Image (cartoon, rainbow, N blue to C red):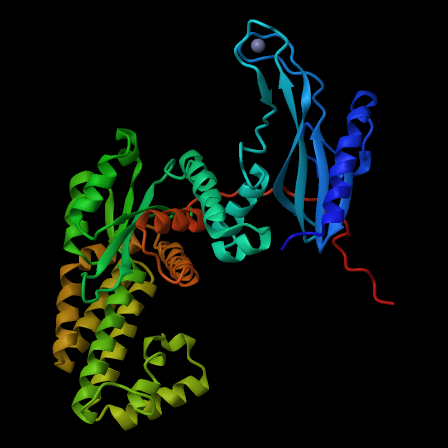
Length: 457
Ligand SMILES: [Zn+2]
């Protein structure tokens, strides 16, 4: 889209005419104030095909040669176009009349040079403040790079580079690794297996107290945890009092190695996830046994697959009705119902009133699992038994790890969905940390209305 030649001509001419204004300091003072880029002023503006074109230049009136230090003489101007932050939702193009200078010193080798500024990089197509804003939009607000690039009128790679440059700076500078006392270790799938690769897992480290992602590392093993913790300063590990993990022996033994003073907890979130997998396994087996095929639309068990993963506390009358009808039609031996109940009983152990109460509730869970005689449930009960110390530790460590872990997992899921999956792990890690790992500073604004709503007429 090329703006009308006459408009460009107009803005270019006014930029030249301004040369005489430099000395008496005129220009569009109001526009300069609103433009608000230190060291710059606006001396003309025009609307070109729905975009603001602003003719700007610096207020600098002299410049010393960087080679010999002698002040240079003006050597004309060169126009460059740069995109800036939108004004009131309207895209902005800056027409910067860049001064060029020539060294007065005859002996000097430098010849001529043009002015530079921190806010506008050499040959940049965006101002730095626009690049910072792109990073914030993609990182904090979870907008896609494509979407933001379109809005700023630049290419995908240009916007993406802004996210890399400013994002990495933020990630490095943030103090996210300081003052952590409760560490959550979790894992999720980065890439599902296909013909050419195996499933790729990612281990995530979470600050449970602040509910923030500390890091994401490829792989799922004790070695990943060991290496990551060992890379922290020595005092960092000393401060960790609680470590919550999945019931995964690799993580547990690594934590015992590198964080010997931390209390190991298998928290509610992870235990229930394990039990939910068990519900899914039994549902799939019963589905196959009763219908001879995998669940599909119209099958009673397939219809309630999501309800089966909900706790009874979250079911309304309609949900109960669907659950009961689905099980009556598709679960002839009551196996799914039994596993579903087992998961609720396990959840009750977490909701218990103190450790003694929780221990009694676990006994109820074990009793139920033994009576049911379902292979998947027996296996789950064995796992729970093996980890009962860590499960009960939930009650001695404040029991508050669930919310943050779950919230971070939901955010991770959201970021993956928005990005339609990621091929490059570095990009993925950057986006995760920008989205749920760092503290974004937002300048507070004043209220322009009182707290009380205006009284209705
Ligand atoms: Zn010089």
